[in-house]
Image: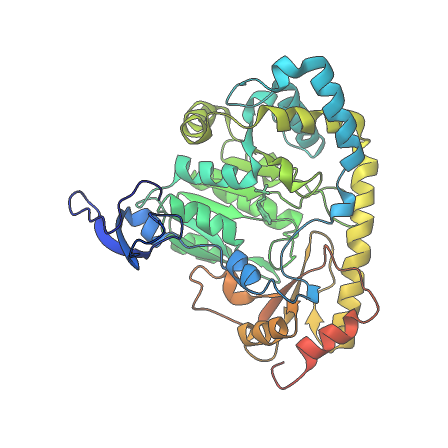
Length: 421
Ligand SMILES: Cc1ncc(COP(=O)(O)O)c(C=O)c1O
């Protein structure tokens, strides 16, 4: 907004005029009469792109928080802080010239090789060249959407859906078709009714329901994708965070020409590094790299070096074991507390979330809970269109639930009080 004259009107081009509240930073000078409105031409895309309902909800309720079950945020005590200090000091002392320099758009090859190796251990036949590093997996989703969809090439999005995926495909202006996620798995008939260019799924410990597709459902989706030449974008954000299961077999393993996998270190190392990745069939590497060049030139060199340094020094299985143990304890505690309050949720098996059934409108329950300082997210936030659709569940994040004495009372007051449940 800096440098844009107040009351600017742009009448030409494909844009229509809209008004924005003047930002405090724009043209604000002492003694000047301040315009209350400023007219700015925005693209259709910018006008219609939905914001994150969850971020809005949680930031508006930030003051007076007694119990935060809202954001799917990792436990900071599990961040590898001290190790990161060592890795950073060593890196700067020995390799600053490279670690602080520009680097390839595709990402650092040794890091890509590590990620490929882990996917190979899960049954995928993937080479390091197929793994492209991104700025978190959110950029990977946006790049996949830009690569494969357009206003005439729709995407099937799970319903309920991770809102970040909905935003990423909305940025590419892709129309969306719902793919219902039920207790029995994806409703495949929905795919057969509507031809889409891409299918987005989050098959392991889904955000928001916590549900996972079983081997057979994954295989069926892979077969469908290969047979119909439809790309499947598989969001694997929580794939390594099953409580007692070995990491699941990705859909990618059975869809070699149509499978695309998106992953992240946000949940297993720390989100502040912003290191994610996207794995694509060989033929898509070159166009994907052009899209990523256009949007960010390259992922951060320093954070990739840090992530790689952490992987070199950590015993990955032992590290994952610590994370799973902590999140499992929290999940079981929150599940037990909900049970005591008469709230039903399926037993958690991994990831960060419980999907709790409410008797009344979940958005009303969430509002009452927020007024008591307990943050939760209602089902509406995970619809394709935020104002419509079922409203009978709350997503509760157990990732930072410490089960401190008194929390049960806070939950009870917030969720169990009144006639909202
Ligand atoms: C299912 C899912 N996918 C992707 C992301 C994005 O993570 P990041 O961009 O930090 O890698 C999240 C974050 O919460 C998520 O829950």
